Length: 376
Ligand SMILES: Cc1ncc(COP(=O)(O)O)c(C=O)c1O
Image 1 (cartoon, rainbow, N blue to C red):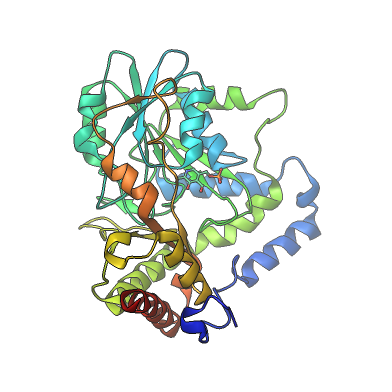
Image 2: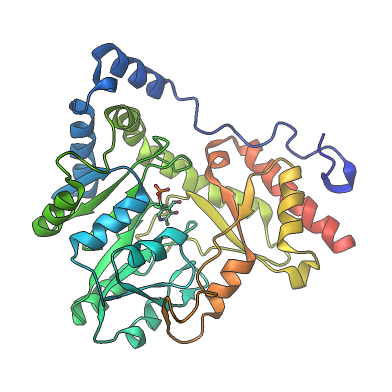
């Protein structure tokens, strides 16, 4: 029993969060088959080729380049677009830390724009004022169950001759206005990292409709051998997961609806806005903005208490609001990014493939902790 459990009582979910990665028999079989045919120990084989073909089909796009991580995929995307010294790349003040570093890695300068507080993603209505003569690209991520306003961003990018890198590492198989996440950008980015909904422990890929971008990224990857490869074994375990991506995304979407309904209106906790018509998120994480003024307890106290109840909730990203002017240009206030960095709490996805009673237990734990805070 956890000493941190509210009132020292029994945690709401005594066994803790569901195991991740899933104990998936199809993945086990894929590993064994790769062992039997020897591909696990080869530089090249049929698995990476098959995975590439299936990702091309899923995205309805001409080119996919698998690689060793989502982080390297972002860099390959920028290099493929010829972003470099002296260029500016617009990104949200709240985003995955490595995205900022990837812009710096190619010699470009990040330009920070606030997020839309409803979706946790770059606010498209504030991008135009950030464009300068140096601006070459927009790097936009779909985050925490929120989806960026891609048709507005696409229109803006086309109007100003900018390129888009669309980071779908948290949104594999999601759709925005009927189009798969990653296909609105000039380059899309996905991750197969250890916590992702398609996981190989490590791995990633870029997707692009542009032959020349694909070729440039490939050339950067080529040091006489592939410098940032996805292995045969990684591809082998991804193939059976990819087959079930749509089905599992559907289950996660239903689970989020049920969970939020079960939670009802929560004091000082506002969930990410659920997707509009034609949109379907994939819920790698589910975000709430936690208000410590309302709950009179810090976010850290909330996270500690909720984890002690057996629920896998954690803090969000730190964002870039505190980055100095020597490293980036800031446009307008970044109040929502700042709030997101300080107040985001994220439910990790495995429980969204659990049973209805698992979801009820999560809702019960959240309500229990908030009620205990209110009584203190
Ligand atoms: C939005 C976003 N972009 C990029 C990445 C990087 O992916 P990887 O861990 O495969 O490097 C992550 C990982 O969590 C992410 O959440």
